[in-house]
Image 1 (cartoon, rainbow, N blue to C red):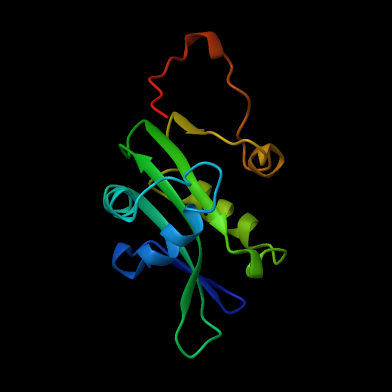
Image 2: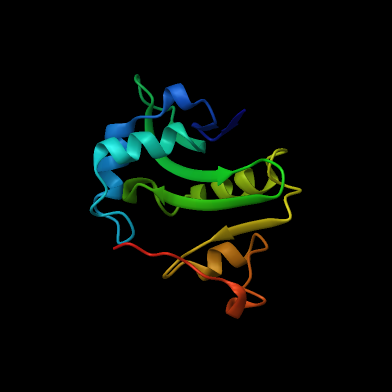
Length: 143
């Protein structure tokens, strides 16, 4: 799927993703700073990815991403959401979230999860809430 607005494009074509660009950003993030390029590439291969591209240049380049891990039937996990700093403040994060949450393959799933340290306000605008029963959830966490 492809969405166009104000010189930017959101595209779910996995062949278009710029894995070195994605890795460069993620390696600076608090949630994925130690992730190798090989792991980033493998995670992209097995996800529904929403790449955000600046089309205003001669050679369009990737400036953002939202990655969704899903079975397309009942569950999805949103992760690795970012907009490059030089493109922030233009409403691109909100547009990216609108696109992800309204995507036909994701909009009717029973459960759509994410984890964030500091962007609760953004995600609440798109229907995400605190866990209703956090005591039921468990995890295996390997730092």
